[in-house]
Length: 102
Image (tube, rainbow, N blue to C red; front, side, top):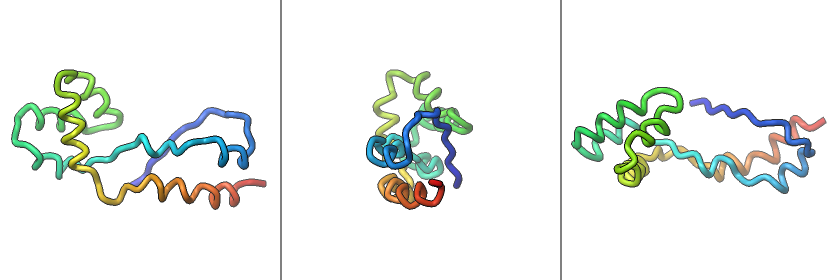
């Protein structure tokens, strides 16, 4: 699995970055769509999951289902992958910054 992000130039040093920036990975949630299929047999839920395939598709799919948004988010969270650990990812930042800092 590969996750990429683009960041704007923020004009602070790498040391300041470590002190001031909060963990952006905290907001990222990853669900196993195959596991999610077993959460419910509801046809609307399965149609929603089909809409989630592709880049940025889940946000668009949730927007198309405003009445079910809370319920669908809860169901997606039940299908979260076990390997996603944003705290672990963020803990590696100081070492990564040390490697790339001139």
